[in-house]
Length: 294
Image (cartoon, rainbow, N blue to C red; front, side, top):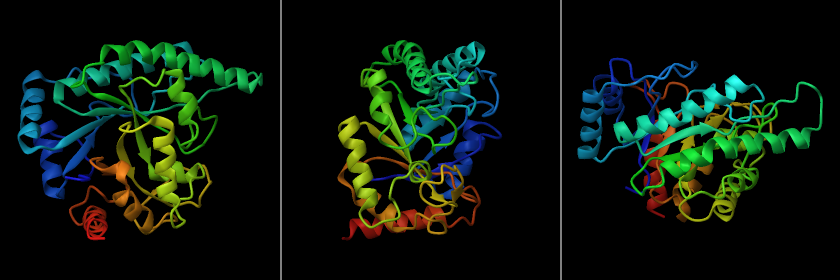
């Protein structure tokens, strides 16, 4: 399938009886989950029998799944405990991805903080060194072809973002030596909030072109398909239903048509995308068919 379409689902009763069952009801061809508390540091060990059952079931159905790391992760933090727990959380989620057969783990690229009002450029450089020190050993440990990807998700530009929008990916990936298991998760709301012209004809195509220029072919592994409540460049991470925000449906048609997105799953994080009567999953499937027919 050129672009499987799905949404983020809740685990609830478990990976099989909760997440997979909900994904079935919604007509998901792919989906994303948290494997623990998204706003806490506790590391959930999982249940081996359920993990194996989920992995086998998704494998039989050919459904590609992803894990989203907790929101607290910030490898650029100057607070030692936050940095250490962030590194441990990323490594744990990658291990969980391997256990459940998930294709990758989405991690927000984080921010740097300069509470003393010092040299911002120096603080930014120091934060990227922290990212390197934390992630390179983890990436080296998952270097196998069948191992899950670490998927870097640029932020919307709020605060002192280490990687806001597409252009910042160059320095971030360079800090990781453009590691072959460091992939990209492109969130349409985030990059739009950071200034990408997704609301202009051809703007989405140009944005994906830039992603490929920076990362090389095959590094774009996942798209978070979200419209935006706010205007371009607002640096606000507020998702909206597809076509009801400031991005518009044209951007998603361009995504489906771009050669570099072939095979890349699109996962929604929009309001109501987990409800049985949601409009966004059918809409994305219709836009996919429209793009294929051109």
